[in-house]
Image 1: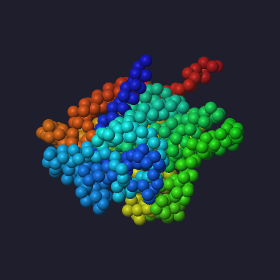
Image 2: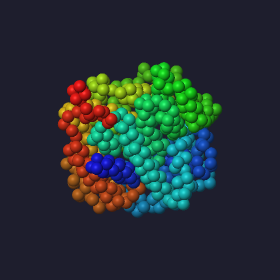
Image 3: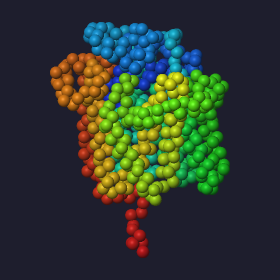
Image 4: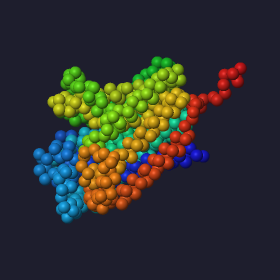
Length: 540
């Protein structure tokens, strides 16, 4: 009875962090959030899918960019078109009265009858996540814009957490990962700052990340028992992913490979494979046919819309500094300071990556224990990583060599499968695996604690973007607690007392769950779920 209660505690931990991140993040601090939100508002106002090159940002969104503070990165990008834009540095120099006046003006913004003069460069995105959010936004349209965004964030982030929790747990079950390592996987996933940076703002990633976990889980289930009853759910989840984000085209190639392999091994009939193909074409085909009609390409990405094809993308591959880009993306998959792109200790992030690499190496070392579903999951990770590399090349070509990378939030779709394989390696490695698990657990939770207390809370309270030393933290909080709380209430989307209560709940749950789960880790190797505990000697 203890482990189910711990599992429930892990889910609560994830929900608390998701809600806290949603409320702490200032308006539009999420990656490209104003334009993703503009997509949502455009849907219910026009009842038509937006078309890239024609869709404009809603007027209330465009006007809000003149009033709300923004990161230095976004400020440098937008100040040419919006001279009145205000960076965080300038925002914290304003008087409290000036800040309150701007917030009052923000509260007066409502969906207008006409769009702004600013284009919406996110109009090409697949629509499913926005279609889910649009009715809620329509229902909330009478509320102030910041309140609308907060409620959408809370809905998206909490829904994402619940879907990801059960998707990752199902993947653990299908790959036969034993307890308590399954619960450790879930706890580590929900200790990831980058997970919340990706899912706790208005966009389509909140739905894409958990769907990816379900895609891996259901296709692993299909490989274990290839039949119509397992391939149809797997195909349905894949189609949902394709309707959410174009990068699921990489998973479609992976799924096609799995179906081809099972056909070759005569584990399924041709009519079963055809049923799967028809289902994905019916559910996701219309969107990609639309892309072909409108943009003359399947994916509909901004780069291809700008004329960057395979030739230009491959030509860019030899010009990219891959060691630096790979390091940035790998570390960015663990920590990136939202739209401000602030830094974290490179040494700490490298240690986290090294622990994961050791765990994956332990999984590879025990290759005799690998099941076909595990190998398929690894192949999916490799294929999707190749897709990220391709996106890097396309972005590099499109920016004429200015941006040799792509968004680190893409990699969150691999968070669950990578963690499951890593903990499989730990579970098969006796005391070394136990040590790896404890170190991983401790480090991920430490980074989350530092993220809240030293990084994000001070940053959004006027502490600036420079890293703070541990010795400065107490003085920073103690010497200006009242002023910092007032600044935080005027910058974040919730009042400081609510945010600090959420912080205390997150820290308390983190400590409690860490201690309990560490004590449950076994000294010896674990049987996989479903493995026969009777030894060969007893059989004889």
